[in-house]
Image (cartoon, rainbow, N blue to C red; front, side):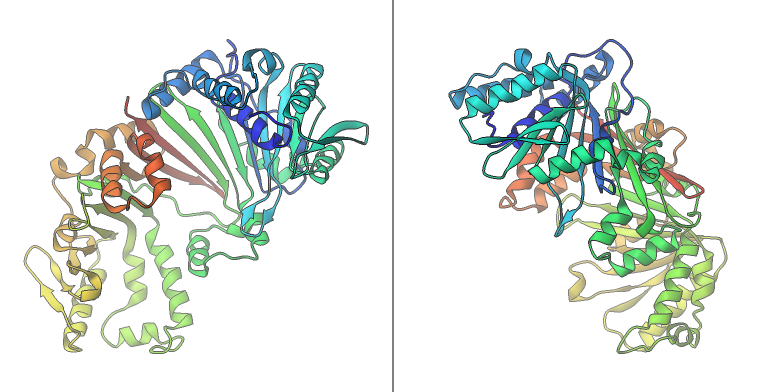
Length: 521
């Protein structure tokens, strides 16, 4: 199991054990960020840092989550037993408590410097050690027992070993055990520790300063640099949506913090939007009015401004070959449809999905307007236009709401229904979903669902923008995903989230979000 021929895999497992909270828990408060980013080369794309010895309270929270998700009472003991059992099967002896725990420090970090094609490069791992000599002895012992070939290398006064078929490198300096994928990468870590590094960059420090206090692990991502290294391969439409929301992805950074709580898991995110001020607002009222049997729902505020930007871009580009540039608005205007006024009337929007199998699957886009009749009039005009053009499958809808439906083999067994009533416009897949999107009594709305209420409560002052009903979403996935998708079915036993709530807010060019997940126990 523990062989010098594969130090990355071996010590990544040690990190995984420690990240699981199995290190000796300290009685003090949870540690704050360390200097491990100083081992990462400047401009590194991703950096993750976590605690190896969390407080007793945090360790208890981690074990609670492990029990709820996997039925494991003590995650640390479970992982250690698997490691030691694997070693015995390989004819080796491995005692984590004696060989690793005595020198294991408080924190560990993993850095990914660049992209190799479409994937992140091999990681650089740095693990704090409280006893460098004991750590060196552990590395030397494992190197000899592994039976692999290795060579001793010295660089800038730092001694380390390079071995295995991949030429992995491992050594101890500056009170840390450093593991790299190659001799070159290890030398780069030495250079970073004594010169320029990710930890010394203002871009990194400004981002990581927004990490949550008392987190178990924090992850920094340089979104803009990833986009640049991928040759700006971001979907143009997605980029337009982000920019219309005040976000310049080419300049953005993000930080995520994992905060285990006593009754749920929380992930806090913050991002420097790298652009103008993003739209703000509270879409929770609209979200809470969606059908209670929705297995997923998400909403956004400031929808009108975003839609206006999208319409302008679409009009400028045209829809080849039928519609040349700068003709979309004029063409619809002749039919009595003013896109600018319609877009300007929308204030917020939400999407929900419902159903327990392929046959009952449905959902709708729900748009709330400012109360003017521009959007409703446009729906009536568009329905008339389609029917007069003799578009197949178009039928007028009247009664509780006005609008039209479209049936087509390409749409499957349900029609696409467009409705207008009061201050709402709904585009739904299926008649039932479309009418449900017009607004329901509170007893049949998400706001009455106990799991939704729990998510809203845990999000606190952060307005909810997204919700997932865990059991319903899991059941649908089990019905739809074929057994041949082994990756999915391997994780199904651990998908025991009772709900997931997502909240977000913005202040200037800083966006913050919170994800809370309830776990069944």
